[in-house]
Image (tube, rainbow, N blue to C red; front, side, top):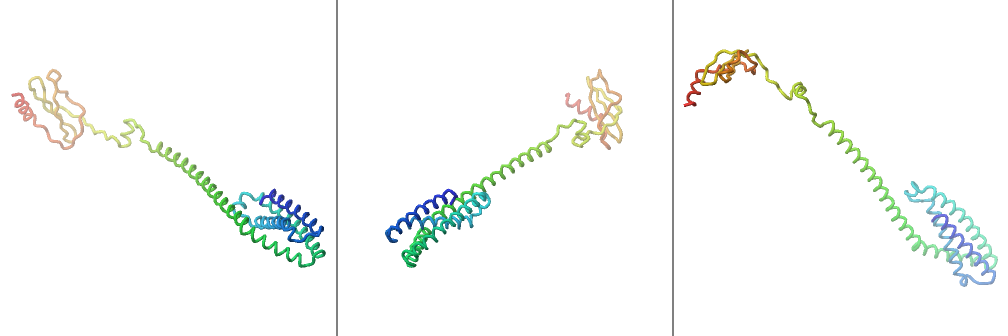
Length: 254
C-alpha cells in the first residue's frame, strides 16, 4: 500500500471509530454496530498488512523503489500508532461500560475479519504483486539483453569492417609484386648469333647464351639476324638443329 492508500485507511478507521464511540454512548450493543466495527477492523487490518509489506518488500522494489518503500513504511508506522491509540481507548471504554467480555467479543470478531481479508483481499494483492514483479523483471532483462545485443552488434560490425579493410588485398605495383615474390621475373642473359640460314624471304637465327642457353628465332630476310639480344636464361638447353628446322620448313612448303 502506498502512503495515500494508508491515509485513506486511517481516515476510514477514524470515521468508523467515532461512530462506534457514539453508538456505545447511545447504548447500542456490538451487533447493532457491526457495520462500523467491521469497517474499523478492516482498516486496522489493512494498515497492519501495509506495515508487513513495507518491512519485507520484494527485491525489485528494494532495488528501484527504495524511496517509496521507506515512505510507505513511515506512513504505516504512524498510522499503526494512531490506530493503537484508538484500540486502547475503545478497550477502556468497553471495559468500563460493558465489562471485559465485550472487548473479548470484539477481538473474536476482529480475528474473523482479518482471516477473511487474508484469504481474499491480501491473497489477491500478493498475487498481483508477484505477477507485476515478474513482468517488471522480464522487461528489465529484455531491455538489458537488448542493449547488450545492440552493443555487441555494433562492436562486431566495427571489428568486421576494420578487419575487412586491413585484410583487403592491396593493389601493388608491378615492382612491388616482384619484390613480394608475387611475380617472378625470368632471368635474362645476352645471347649471341651462332648460325643463320635463309629460307625464301625468312631467316632462321640460332643464338647461344650463358650456361648453354639456346634460342631459335625467325626474322624477315631484309631485316636479318641481330648479332645479339637479351634472351631468357635456360641452362643446359639443347642446341636447335637448324638443318632439320630448314628441312621441316621445306617439307611444309611443298
